[in-house]
Length: 338
Ligand SMILES: NC(=O)c1ccc[n+]([C@@H]2O[C@H](COP(=O)([O-])OP(=O)(O)OC[C@H]3O[C@@H](n4cnc5c(N)ncnc54)[C@H](OP(=O)(O)O)[C@@H]3O)[C@@H](O)[C@H]2O)c1
Image 1 (cartoon, helix red, strand yellow):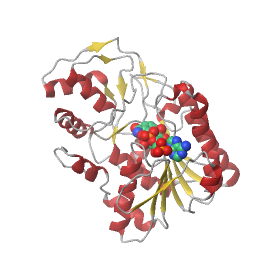
Image 2 (cartoon, rainbow, N blue to C red):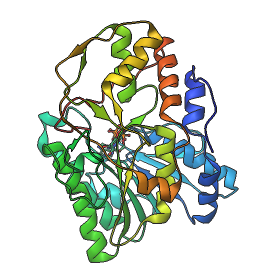
Image 3 (spheres, rainbow, N blue to C red):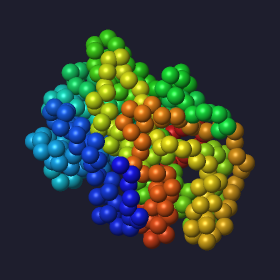
Image 4 (cartoon, rainbow, N blue to C red):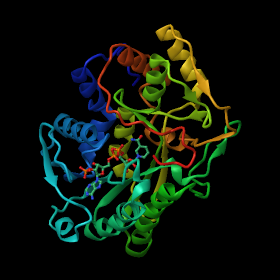
C-alpha cells in the first residue's frame, strides 16, 4: 500500500502516522504467538514502535502484552513500561519471559567520551540478553555502519558483503552482532540483524538536518555526499515483521529506502521549497555509507512512503517550525557514529 497523506503538521498527526500499523503488520500479529518485549524503548524509535505493536495487536484482535523496557519509562496507551538498566544482570533476569523481542538498546551519539561504556552497552549487554532470552526470537537493531564506506558511483553494501566498520563506535556495533551470532551458532538462539540507515521521523533524521540548515541559511558539509533514508514507520513495520524471519544462524537484513540521495540534491529541493540559497562547505568526497536494501524490499515489500513524499513532509514540518528532538544525526561524519 502506498501512503497518500499530503502533509503532516501536528505532533498528534505525526505520532498517529508513525504508529499506524499496515495490513501486513496486523496479519503478522495474527500469526505471531505471544507477547512483544521492546528492549531500549525510550529512544528515538522505541515509543513509536511500541505504539505500532500495540495498535497492530489490537487490530488483530489478540490479547497480548506489549512491554517497553528502558532506564526511562515511556508512556504509551496500552504499553506496559518497565524501568531496567540492561547492564544489571539481576534486573534483566527479573524481566518477564517473552517469545518476541525487539532489541533497540545501544549507546548513543557523542559516546566518544566514554568508549568503555559504549563497548559495555554494545558488546556486553547483548550477551546478558542472549542468555536471558535464549528461547525467544530477537530482532537485533544494528546499523549499516558495520560495512565499509562505498564509492558513491557504485552499489550500496549488500548483506553478503564482509563487514569492515570504520571507527570505534561502528566496531562496537559489529561487536553487538558478533555476540548475538555466538549465541545463535552455539546455542540455537534465533535472531535477525536489522542493519538500518537512517530513519526519518520529522523531529529528527538526515533529511530534517539538511532541511533545517537550508532554512536557517547554515552551510552544509559535503564531505559525505550521499545517504539513504527510510520513513521511521516503514522501518518499524519491517522490524515487527522481521520477528517472523529470525533464524539460527542469524539472518541479516539491510533496512533503508529505495534510493540513494545526494546532499546537494536534497539541499536544492529544500532551497526551492523555502526560496533560499544553499550554502555549502567542503568538496564532495568520493565515498559514503550506502546500503542496498533490495533483499528487505523483496522479503517484506517496498516502503509505503516514497522519498519524494517524505521530503515534502519534512519541508512542510520545518517550514511550520515543527518540534525538533535536537538530535543531529552526524551523517556528515565519515567515521560512523550513528
Ligand atoms: N534511528 C536510526 O536512524 C538508526 C540508524 C541506525 C541504527 N539505529 C539503531 O537502532 C536502535 C534504535 O534506534 P534509536 O534511534 O531509537 O536509538 P536511541 O535513541 O539511541 O535509543 C537507544 C535506547 O537504548 C536505551 N538504553 C541505553 N542504555 C541502556 C541501558 N543501560 N539499559 C537500558 N536501556 C538502555 C535508551 O534508553 P534509556 O536511556 O532510557 O535507558 C534508548 O531507549 C539503536 O540501537 C540505534 O543505534 C538507529
